[in-house]
Amino acid sequence: MPLILEGIVTTTNADGQPNISPMGPIVEPDLRTLILRPYQTSTTFQNLKRTGVGIFHVVDNVNLLARAAIGKLDPLPALSSCQEVPGYILDDACRWYAFRVCSRCDTEPRTRLDCEVLSHGHLRDFFGLNRAKHAVVEAAILATRMAWSSRSDLETEFTRLATLVEKTGGEEECRAFDFLFNYLRQSPDTCFADS
Ligand SMILES: Cc1cc2nc3c(=O)[nH]c(=O)nc-3n(C[C@H](O)[C@H](O)[C@H](O)COP(=O)(O)O)c2cc1C
Image (cartoon, rainbow, N blue to C red; front, side, top):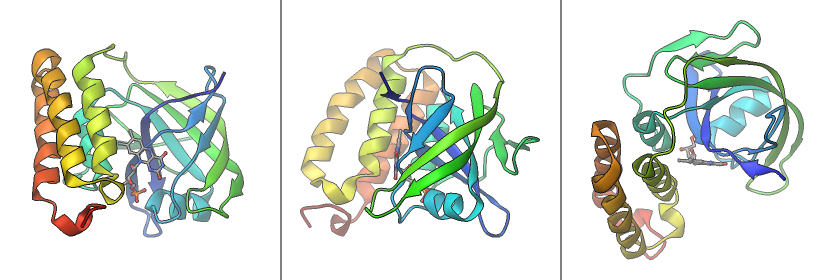
């Protein structure tokens, strides 16, 4: 049965620079194919439409994921050139999967890209299950969906997730979560669905 694997996709911008975005493709456990569902408005979609190739990463660095989710990766993390497809591999990923887009359905705002994995690599072991890391992943997803939620609903959810981060997280998880919570608090009311 297919499932969703949250990770990070790198694509190449028109000027050759990397674009780094969290995405949750639908995968089979063997990860030979990916079904990506980027919104048409995303840079990831525009780049994949133009180049037809990208690299999906399995990660445990939630600080990287949190910052990439809201486009605040400055400086960029360390990247290496992929030998198999034109693109960038995140040095701090656990595993990477270079893919090509085989077919595209973009009749809806959220598109569907059926992708075939061309090659893959293992860089280091996955840290393991940790509730704080998962709480940061949830918070990062919520932070990218402010336009569909009210400020008060999001603050309630963040407050619930904060308990998990405090109880089970390390420095990286606390920093990533605080970064997202501050981003939420500092966002103007017009960013939220109830504005
Ligand atoms: C764990 C996670 C999974 C995500 N999955 C998707 C997805 O499947 N499709 C999508 O359009 N956005 C997804 N997002 C939101 C995008 O990462 C976010 O909108 C990002 O800003 C898009 O960046 P881009 O415009 O550079 O592609 C996800 C975010 C997180 C944190």
